[in-house]
Amino acid sequence: DAKTTQPPSMDCAEGRAANLPCNHSTISGNEYVYWYRQIHSQGPQYIIHGLKNNETNEMASLIITEDRKSSTLILPHATLRDTAVYYCIVRVYNFNKFYFGSGTKLNVKP
Amino acid sequence: GAVVSQHPSWVICKSGTSVKIECRSLDFQATTMFWYRQFPKQSLMLMATSNEGSKATYEQGVEKDKFLINHASLTLSTLTVTSAHPEDSSFYICSARVTQAKTYEQYFGPGTRLTVT
Image 1 (cartoon, helix red, strand yellow):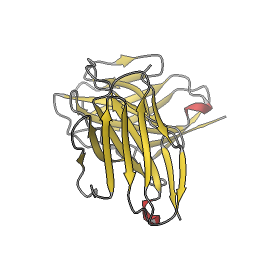
Image 2 (image 1 turned 135 degrees about the vertical axis):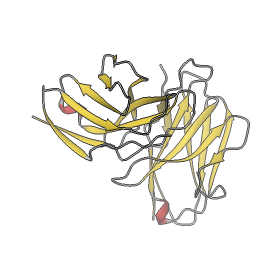
Image 3 (image 1 turned 90 degrees about the horizontal axis):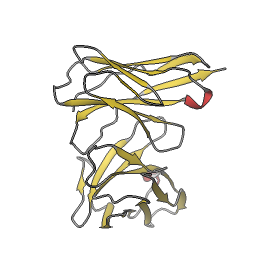
């Protein structure tokens, strides 16, 4: 699986959009980008995934650059409950295993 | 849907004893489950892949004789930490992939906090 690089931490004001970047410059053509988050002392929660098109669901939006070497997870209106560690993972779609990187600790502040 | 549970949620045991952790898929069948370990302030580390009806496959560096995995049914996988030592104290998390799903997302359990004294 391609390696990902994320900033170790970010701050965001409550109610504002949180934009979490992820660099995956060695991604292969058949690898998807997945985002999970882990709230303190809980199991990871699936957020969104995509291949090359931008994706949106009820939780977030995923913007993937045209060359697919980086992506941004957008939480449109961050709340205090969005404080968590966010993991960006790339892997082949039908490959079983997830390997987690170090993630970004998002601190949403009132 | 797609709920994964773990039992117990936390456990304290004495050094040298064995501890069993259960991972259940509550509303779906899971041919494949995964076990992770997470130390404080660190990321999740994949330990092994648990396959129903066959032997588990372990990641490099994980002792298979110390971390025994049994996946006897499509809804249950167990991890037994044998002869536990304080360095085995960690947060253990399982995940499951929906059998015959069109997608390959994994659903994670809430984790089990193991403390070995």
